Each structure stands twice: as structure tokens, then as C-alpha cells.
Image (cartoon, rainbow, N blue to C red):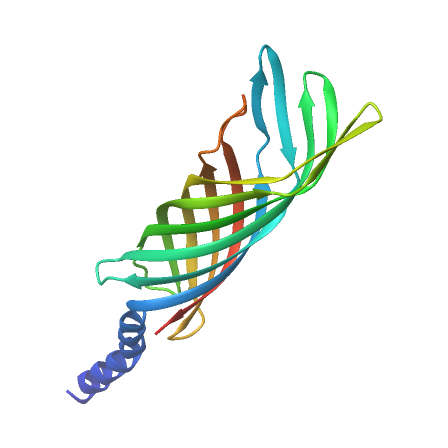
Length: 208
């Protein structure tokens, strides 16, 4: 009986932090995330001439607030900022060097699902949708030694993403969150396809 009592006490001591951790990982949370932005080339055509726009890699920063239910689902609202420099546009076989940048201001809502594990690692998947304000700076285009300057512009479009990542517990309140996001922007026009990009992110999440 004494051995059984010791075993029960030991089991309770070991399992108590796990239960406490599970309780701490529900409810409200906030996060801040930095990202490395890799835009895909945007292809299309003008008439019968193929066109391809290339944008350099850039960076992003996001702030989010969310709520996790007891069934593993989370809802989240997020504001983000991304920027990248223009590289060039190829019109047929003619490269045109571009000097300018594009900035993205996003507001999205997401639905995520956390997979339950018995460790400090919590994998998750999710999707989101929202709007993005795209702002193009004043741009210089150079081809065959001739430079032309064009005014910038801005527009607001629909955006959506799919994301997968993992929460790594650093305590009862804080998680390190590396993730990958694929983003789509409904901005195809002028013969060019929609914008798509890869985002490699690293964030900190705090549970209230």
C-alpha cells in the first residue's frame, strides 16, 4: 500500500505541470512575428508577347491577437507589413531593369487547428483571408541604355494564405513559433497573373 501511495503521489506530481500547461494554452493570446518574404515571378503576356516580373526577396513583420478554444481550434486577427525591391521585368527576350519597391499592408483573419501532443511541440495548420493594400513607389525602368521614370500607385485587393507551423513551449505563457506561409493576392491585371509569395516566419506568442 505504501508503494502504491508513493506511486500515486509521484504520478500526480509529474502530470500536474502537463495539466497546468494545457490550461495555460487556451484562451486569449498575442504574438509578434518576423518573416522572410520570397515573391514568385509574376508571369503573363501583353498581346502575344510573354512578360515576367521579378521582385527581390524582402521582409515582413506581423502583430496578431487570437483566442484558442478547448477543442484545438484557434481564431486570429492579424496586421502585417511587408516590403521588397523591384528587380526587373522581361518583355519577350528584353530585360528591363527596375528601380523601386513595393509595400504591402495586410489585415487578415485566420482559422487554425493545433494538433494535441504530449510534448512541448504543438504542430498546427491554418488558413486565412483578408485585404492587402499594395503601394508601389516611384519607379525607374531602364532598357537599352534608356531610363524612364513612372509614378507609383496603390490599390487594395483580396488576399488569402495557407500556413503550417509548430508552437514550441518556452514556459507556461510563452511559445516560439516557426512557420511557413503561402500567400496569394488577387491583383492580376494588365496581362500579368496574380501575385504569390512564400513566407518563412519566426514569432513569439504570449498567452494571457
